[in-house]
Image (cartoon, rainbow, N blue to C red; front, side):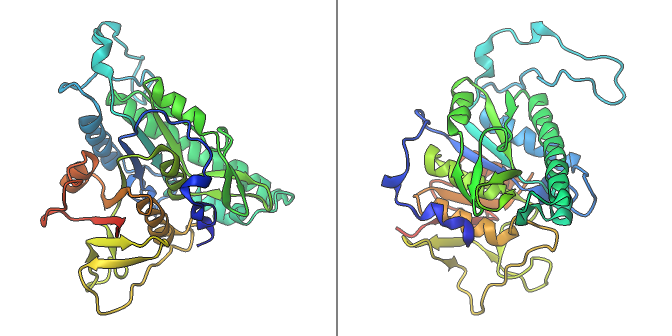
Length: 335
């Protein structure tokens, strides 16, 4: 796919990484999982809360839930609640080194597709207006995800790719200020990035998907594993709504980036679909970017959000082997 051009570089050609300490995991919160994709700008509150709880369970060292950090006024509340005495020993607030990236779901895609932001041409008033509208929408979602994580005691900080200097050239990442992400983690925070409308050196602007962001981050931060949380149990050989759809348990990636299904053995070809309003490439981009990450020797787990299977993936329980009772898709190097 088009986004793979910059990722086909050899590791030796990559500039020095600003990440000086190991990253445990990069997590992608799929837009279709955390939002109601058929309802404009509607968050799936139940799934987001469960995902936030699972992240707290695997990230926070303390067995007890740490004090919440969302001190904003909530709808229906008459005041802001904050008890400084709850924090006590700050060592309890230490978190594993995670990076969170989320998709847009029902936020941003509508604005981007209606205005053609992903095609560029910022000189057109509609595109410029759509660029602004898209960023308002995705930043609204980002704030709510940061707040959900903060309520679980995760010291999360929203980081917009546009504001952090992510720029593309013909839709390939040409520059990104990864030092700000690394510094945020080194300071004890969990960065929360998102798919965003960004400037493009050739076509003026485009949409940078969360999947491409994760692939770029993984190449430099070298996490131990990567988890994609979705609204289905993993990758299927055809749309999962079809009755005969088969869950692909393991995908092997060759050194040239090509991939093949290892488990189960298939008789027919694979059909990957993209929703009409999805300007980021849908499952096709997800598999392509997951393959690029696996090519680096990093296992990628694609699994349904807010399930026992996602909790095992987030905790790193699958690194020693994939149990038969685990439902999901692992994408790993064939080496």
